[in-house]
Length: 138
Image 1 (tube, helix red, strand yellow):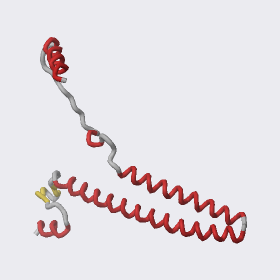
Image 2: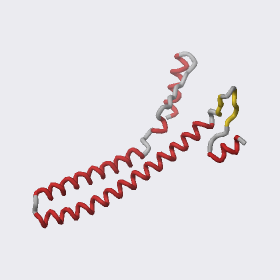
Image 3: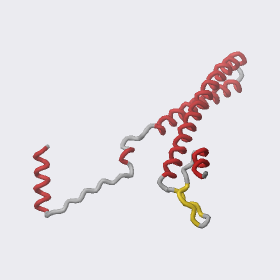
Image 4: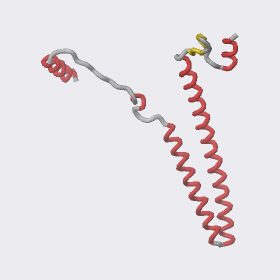
C-alpha cells in the first residue's frame, strides 16, 4: 500500500517505520531531490530566457514607435523617453548575455572541489631516481 502511494506521488518508498518515526533511504532521497531541482532550474532558465527575448522584442517595437513620436513632436521629453528605452534595452541585452555566460560550464569545473594527493613511500634517493627516470621518459 505504501509503495503504491509512493509510486503515484513520484516519491522514494520508505524503508522502515520505527516508533512513529519514518526512516527514509538516504541514498535515494538526495538524487531525487537534486534531479527535481536541476529540472526546475532548467525550466526557470528557459522561462527567464524566453521572457528576456519577449521584453527585448517588445522594447524594440516601442523604441521605434517612440522615435517616430519624438521626431514628429520634436519635444525634449519624447527624446528623453527614447533615451530611457534605449538604456533599458541595452541593460536587458546585457542581462541576457550574462545569463548565458552563467549557464556555460566553467573551465576546469569538473575538477572543482577535487583534491589529488599523491604519496611516495621510500627514501630520498629512491625518489630522486624515480624523478630522473620520469625526466628521461619525456
